[in-house]
Length: 317
Length: 293
Image 1 (cartoon, rainbow over the protein chains, first blue to last red):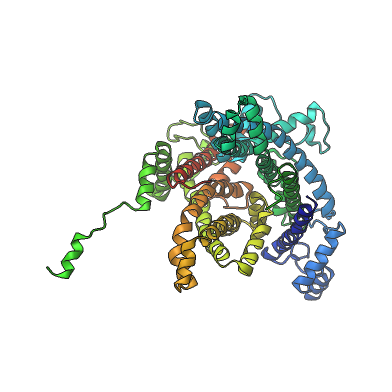
Image 2 (cartoon, helix red, strand yellow):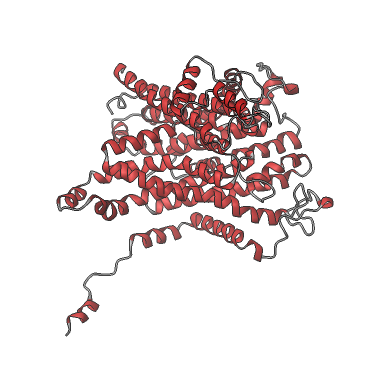
């Protein structure tokens, strides 16, 4: 186990390095000079050169990267061009809000997805299986930003039950676990949960169906085990794969909530990201994406380790 | 009898090819056929939009803004600038379908090529290609598409570029794993032992055997690509106004949900229908080609 753990962590390092290189390159592929956003229009060539030197933009790319990554390791992600505030602080607050949304969506999605998938896999080729498959297909096909708008039309505009925007009353930014704030969470979390419900249900259905057709299940029945006890064995076999799918989905929820956060004006990382894009605030864009991607890498690492912990077959490969 | 005449009496029985079998099985799948019909209708109406007697999708009318569905002259209502929704939805299919399908096609060719190279050659070629792919896998696809599009700026070409980059890594990964599976088979060894060159072996023996599964996998990505393409425009980093495009229309109509909510929801419904049909058709193709997920 320990050697697997070490190998897996060592494997993450080059990936994290690659991720940081891609985030660094984002600013390089952006058209236009990054200085034009902050320099006055009538700046002389000398002033521009001085500014360039001050930001280290006159150095070769690898050196610029080394300076950039060195600062990030020390927690300095630069300053936002639009607000002048440190990027790290803004990203932290926003990612916190996104995590809240992603976890809430998982709490809704995973139990429902697991239950539906199990039901369909157990009652293969019945009406129940067909219904679940239809739900799952609809779930993975729906553009969730549109679903969010439809839910707002139904529950906010028509029925007036739930608020359609923000994370608290009066555009409040501080989260509290009370009904006034939580009712703001319901619509975005449900919207975000639909796609993972479809994916988890689909995967678990196929998984459970495959396991039920394995020889050892026949053997268990043959030795006189009850259906319920057989089900326990099947669940144990399915657990590792189901877990990895759910872990991956949690990561996707964090990175994929951008569109949903825009629909609901949720003050999370996606909201920050779209602001950064429209104000051409490249340091903010870079910092947000780096943090989200590293979160995703980290989530994958934890899933892999947990998977190995519950399924001894994985360590050998 | 002359030797040339003998050719007419070939002893080989005429067996239907692999693809005709696939199409025969697919045509017996009612759901897949229905989806294929809907998709064809969408594509054809988008292609021939100027010739089927639609209203001008760019011509607005200040007094006829946000007409309800069924208003005379506006079968599907009108948008926030009084433009005919039916015309805009059909014209909108042009850009959305284009940006939603082309990246997967491009990524299919590039990813397949990279994957076959990595899977067949192995060694350091494999290491370089697959470790690069791993890095791109560290980004959720939505995040990567938005990051690249956001950095490049709005525009159709930039959307195509960013979505193509998003779909190359997953296709490469599948192509590599299928190819290394085929690479281990005996007939490849036989071909190499009989002196076949690498290029020839890949062209003759590998490509035909790996293309099926990769193709099925690529079709399963089209629905995600469609949703992402419309999503980029919805965020304002894809197609620019006043072009009709489903995601962009959904965005500009958001302010209308208090006036005429169901008209505002129509462009998203188009994305949903298209992506649903793409998914169901891909599932049908998967079982018709007997490819395991």
